[in-house]
View 1 (cartoon, one colour):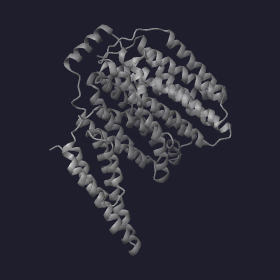
View 2: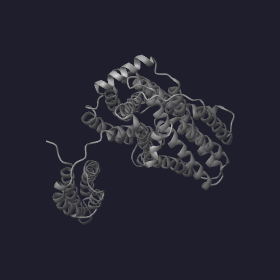
View 3: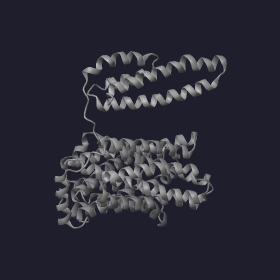
View 4: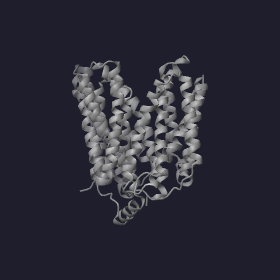
Length: 488
């Protein structure tokens, strides 16, 4: 029997209210009056677990119920007020019959999967080198295991793309989620560098199965006239992962351990595996869409064409630029006499600007303006930002330049995805996305390693990168190719 979202909210709300009263009225007096500290530890842990379930129920009801956002806000506030949940339940019982349910948007699951995949990636950044050192790895091995993940991730992207076209994106999504979540738990068994290398190979490969399948699934279940907006909104979750992931892992690792951080990420992955099995298994292409895609495959013959090549180039240079920023920005900030915290806030600034442009009505531009034009503009702004970073010497100018970089990123990411979607039929889209995200991974490796090999200081490195990006932006703007809407 299906439970109404408001009923689920009421049940978890009552449990939260009861556990709060037990904590305040029983456990805390036992600790402070009789010295039984275990009471607060046990009851507090139980209350914390219930509060997480209650928070998920609030989010679920906000998504599924046609009501004002004041209700979820009141539910969140009630959790912190003794007896507040009981008063809220009294109101919810009366309100339940007045509000209807919205159809469940399966895109939310796909967005969450994209978030998980990039959250997994970004949560590794602040902790992997220190974790490698803690198990006895030297500086060379520590750097090697970080790059090894990207290399095996590239192979996973390619395999995912090929298999997605053969067995469908849903099966690859399920396999990638399950295997990635299990691989995250393997870090508990790492106690020497050799084991770390093995786990990194496994983790990188199986994690690479997810993203091509997720974007293929999203593209194949979206109307052709809404692809740009959909990709932009998906980019929001990539940006959120980039903002939340490093902060989460850095804070949690300092208080617990790196394997515990990865366990938390694994729990999210297992939860999404279950939700995907429930909500995504019925999302399939219609027979008409399959027949159309099959005819398109027979007529096109190959996944590679001018627009696909343009999208691949955009993907490579987007992440090449990211690799340069990750490598050179901390060095530039340090040379100006600022501490490392400024580097982190600058990177967060560009991420926040990008997320705002993804989620606000500005995302409509990607379905109204030629993707080639927005791609060239985005790449040009990112190249200009690289040049301006080399000239920036104050915190204000650095923040402004990274904000401009965020605008360029927000224009470029949806554009190259939309170009790829429109240039490939659905039955070849998995392979196309597999190679697409392989270029993503290679771009990161190339951006951070090439600048380390070349005889440039950090200022010259930014200038070199800016010129390359501007040249590619010029090429993308002037090389015309017909954008054929093969998607649907």
